[in-house]
Image (cartoon, rainbow, N blue to C red; front, side, top):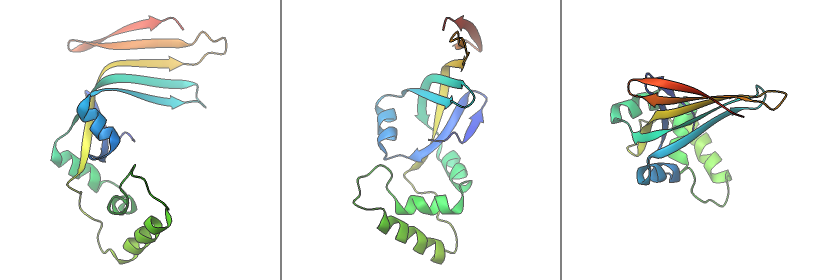
Length: 149
């Protein structure tokens, strides 16, 4: 998933709500996210709780998608087993040619809001004494601890 937006206290993602990841979040909303930039020697690890956001937000974020990406949601059931990509590509190319307007937000498309409880920033060091700063939500603010590498 790609981060779609940052709110003051949450990260927003979008997904079809029938996917494995969406079903797993529904069963257990405790999530961990990892953003890794190996070329920069940095990563961010976030833990928190995820929930499906309001429908209006899902529709707003869907409208922001590239038109071809919006069409792709009508063609592919992400994560389902298929025999060949050929028919999906043919269908997408056909829709791209004949569709006058991008499709509206499907009813099974949603926005997921993750409210972080911990954020760990990791900064790689040549001597392997990597800097690790753990931020933990504490009431209305955050507490920071420097962690041993």
